[in-house]
Image (cartoon, rainbow, N blue to C red; front, side):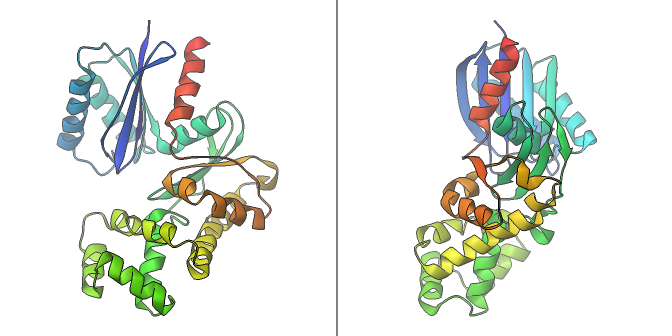
Length: 284
């Protein structure tokens, strides 16, 4: 029976699932990994930990969908590391965006979107990515992401745009001064993660009309600047995966509907869809 290992790799965490035939034999979460940013030593160290957690199980093939894996040289680096460290002859390294598309649509055409710490989208033809509106990262883009929501929350708090009661509650919740914020955003190694870490405040206070409007507008910005840019978008199914999409599902559906789009599916992460996709592939 063929043992197939699947990885859904984000910067914050990597979810691993081992399929034995079409059955899930093992699943676990490991430390996050961005293949574009990580040094070889870090990559090898984290994959060695995975090998140890797999024990003496033989792996026939690996499908790795990861952050930073949209560049050929990065994919080659990960391919070599996977084969060497996990002791597997055959590996397939692809972007997390392709993983999201396969998980959401299988072999059907549609617009696949990621809303997590960062954001991204693509037009998927049922096999590969046909077109991608670049996300441009948290400084230039990433509309609708956790980083973008956190950035907007912080900016409106310190520029006096949040209602006074909301601003006071925010500052009391996190006990952060302006200097703390500036230090974490401009001097820390992962400001996008810090900004995204503030999103629970928005979800906990979504009942407040101002907070609801802030989230609605930011998710609407993602629709307008990304989904709307694909030809025929109004006639294609649009689906989402990621923590932000999952937490703000109701608001996201309303923001999309306000611009004439109907969202077909929203999932917290791609793994369940990837298991189905690769189980069907094994059966074929």
